[in-house]
Length: 179
Picture (cartoon, rainbow, N blue to C red):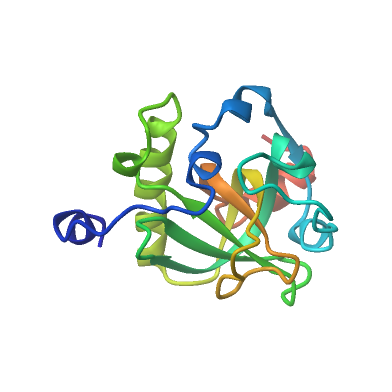
């Protein structure tokens, strides 16, 4: 889908695009050490009361890492790749994670990560829904709309900077302290 949209000259995203692609002036203040959390915790965050679409709000200065069930992957007209994630322990809790198309970003240090995540996502899409994954991404509140499968508070991980499948049995081994 990416190449088709590029050839059709469909524009890349617009709304808060510099923030979504880490090319905004505040991006250098992001705390890059991931906070391990759950989707259930993220979808219950309070949306910021004051909102400036040109600036990051407090929760958008953090990187979050979650384990999730990858329930759906699709390309969108803004050329982002949308991942619908469900909390493995509470399937009613879901959120959207998005990966920008590197050809849509202002050249930045994160473009290789975006490209790698997109390749991984395409590989996971072939497995079908239900794959357990670990997703790391920057917090983002999308005040413009609530994406299909998105959280009621409109919190997303955008952009995703890391995505990996958790192979069956790997989680069990890790919880028992085995390598």
